[in-house]
Image 1 (cartoon, rainbow, N blue to C red):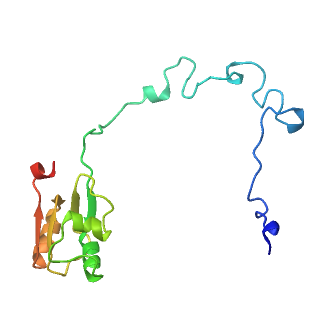
Image 2 (image 1 turned 60 degrees about the vertical axis):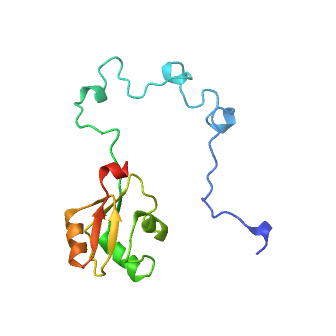
Length: 156
């Protein structure tokens, strides 16, 4: 096969419809917009407009609240920490947030790292993070390690 023999698979590249480019195109003259009227003109934005009737999105009740300054934590499960210790990517003696990021277990810290109890930790490990579930703290202590949670003042 040579470079000049390369072709796309049939049907892979569909030609773009060139609207309003003459009568031969099949979409010429009015460009598929019909004759006159609001929608035939440019600069019209009528999505969600219901002719003066109260729009549906305004008629429905609003529920809930999204806290604008909510903290977002990177989540790590104990099972994954154990997997990384077994693979030699983490040192069980001292696991910090920086070492979790360096090992590739967490992409970025966000507002801190929170440890959850999914999976099992069998190695004695010392972990220092921003947050942890009660079950995670118990699981680490059961394995003979320690999980310290940084105070809110230190995290901010």
